[in-house]
Image (cartoon, rainbow, N blue to C red; front, side, top):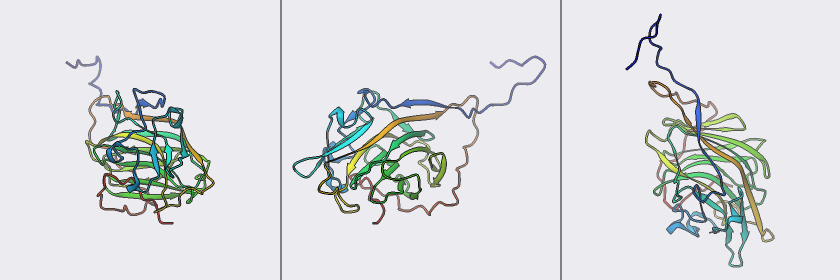
Length: 271
């Protein structure tokens, strides 16, 4: 029961703007992450040629557990690749509507590399925090495949080998992306109230349909994630309404109809 405060009325309901960290990635943790297997791939992997990938997923810790996601050429023409997912792990962490993901990554240099941080659950629920292809050296691909919106962001800070800071808010009414502290896209579609999905961090290899494959002399490549945290708003007292989505005047009109093949990750921009 609330009691009156001496000499005054009860305080007004409060809303805290504090976001608590609810997940800090420890890529070495087998409780957090499963290596070398994902149901975003047919039958859980290890290959996904229908998505224009040369990947052969491997659980070897050297390909992902250090935060450096590696790929090496195989004699059969495929590539051993690193992938980690929270799906199927003992903790089974899911990012939720309203969460904020912050990460720092080093982009790969080699043509054919296809790094991504994304979400997945039950054949869908995909939000791409980033996808990158070095043949488009200054461009990041940011996509909401849940409700069909994509933005190609060009920036001088984006280049092969560069370190970039990314922030994605999985808003109910708008998914919002920041690059190096600058707001670059608000899709005004959002993910809805009850959305939740597992995290995936991966380095794939392009097969050549949408982006060129690796050069014949390339035998290995890498993509690094030095940090990844998820924040969740901490609320004290009743909260009325929802935060308004940030409108980005530079945003392109969202594309796509929201449909999604369970075996298709992303096609990328035209060359």
